Length: 324
Image (cartoon, rainbow, N blue to C red; front, side, top):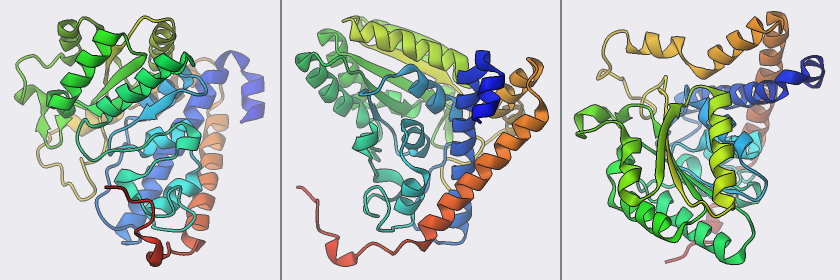
């Protein structure tokens, strides 16, 4: 990777972003295999196809910024720098997991990496991120909170309240709507009058915009611009990032609700393929890109084996760190 970046310094960020997207994709594929084998129990929500949102957003943030994700948070966690083995081990219920197996697929966090956790209450990360942003503002530490949620969560009362609160107080928070066009199994266009969700920002007195969430460079530049703006007192923003998941809403979802040909179109526009084609068009050898893929696959496979070899979480400690 270093040699490739040295050979093409003008594309260093793109190559780093590609590697991160590949790590997220292959990590999710490894998690799929482990779920099929029933090594992972319970519900699993995968982010395959949405990787540019995570890799690009973290390239646009700075150290010390905070990320609050949805239950589809594996990609956010990895983009924040959370170790692959720690993520996979967490889903396996192992002691080496980032929460020692307590969080599983939909509840883990890794604050030491700036990842303040997933949330299975739809949209609940938005008001929590406002709390972090309010603290950042009062401390004057220059940190920005990013909260991510799906298009369906835009209809949750907590999200509305969070946006109103953030706009009124000019909080340094970025509201990221990962619009994969489905509110669980229902097309978002069938649940709202206006499916251009970013337009709602105007009602709160803050800026809103829609971007291509499958374009790493666009995501990075947009998040960087509005994060810097928030640091300078410019207040919050709603960024609607358009994408498509290439898998079901949850593991086992047969996706019978998708119209014929939709997945084929989505695969043609997915972020990893698009970036690889762009880099190849700018002179980066396809053999080098294939070698990068192989190296990432080896890294993910090693993390998977390490996670499987770790001891299971100690059940006698299950009541520790619980608060009511």
